[in-house]
Length: 215
Image 1 (tube, rainbow, N blue to C red):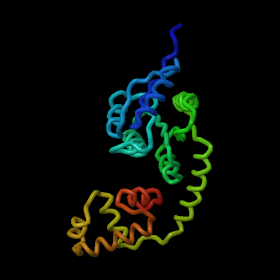
Image 2 (image 1 turned 90 degrees about the horizontal axis):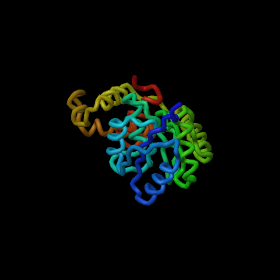
Image 3 (image 1 turned 90 degrees about the vertical axis):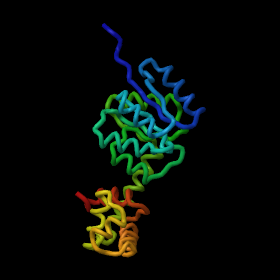
Image 4 (image 1 turned 30 degrees about the horizontal axis):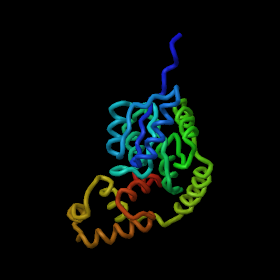
């Protein structure tokens, strides 16, 4: 009988010393096969698309695209690669978003290298691994988002503008479409962001989708 097929892994990390340590740990595991490394989110996504590894291990704070941005692209494109995110700074809302997008693992960067390798094997087999502090923060974030859902619904005009934002239109383009002044559109956007608890257009669209305000 032949030896079991090894789990292919891509690692994206912009801190060279941490990357070196993680690469060394993965290469020591006979069940794992490192097929590529990247130091930016865009390069990581390109590697995932090209190599289609079983697992991608991504630093949360990558240049260009964050680990969650890459996860979103992987999910959107229907790629089979399972994603593990490593984070030095814990943020419950980011974990919430990552879980919503289908993250397979979320660990802190002070996790033991062996534990990270074990997590890679677990998610490759279809499991999910969340560090204990991540689980606690996720629960708090879920409760906070449930509370957020009690905020006032959008006005008809705000809903109309949100739909155009979701189509990728800029504020001046929306103003032309609705025959309103750019200042009026900006005012509506400001109110829209406040109601959704966000600070920019991409986050507004994501939050509106989460709440079922956009189809």
